[in-house]
Amino acid sequence: MTTAHPRFAAALEESGLGEVLVRVRSFPEATRTAAEAAAAIGCELSRICKSLVFAADGAPVLVLMDGASRVDVERVRWELGARKVTRADAGVVRDTTGYAIGGVPPFGHRTRTRVLADRSLLAHDVVWAAAGTPYSVFPIEPEALVAHAGATLVDVRERTA
Image (cartoon, rainbow, N blue to C red; front, side, top):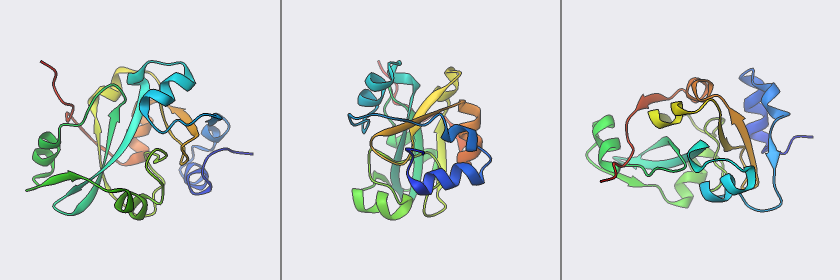
């Protein structure tokens, strides 16, 4: 029996990634944040793929970011040619994706949304992403993640001084 959210499990099957289902891992403790997920898995924070929803001129956009980095909203705005980009609230996240914050997977959403993936994810051979619940994650090669999410590769990480 899979521990992924049923909608996400169906998306994995439909996308030909059914073998990933057997690799979904569930934890008794929450994996809602990148830090919680990395601690549960026992991996580097940067190997966690955060799925973050923003609103660009009111339209939802999903940004996939490594767990050790923060999204630079101005870079997202520039990439999208938007006037204003803000973090989406919990209601918009659930309405757009069908999942609650802390369990949003990188694909398999309720609605089709524009997706940006930060290039920092490509620094790893495998990254871990939410499997639709705040207690489950799955491993995937970054290139497969980008392809299955229908993402555009961008540089939207905050730069540290």
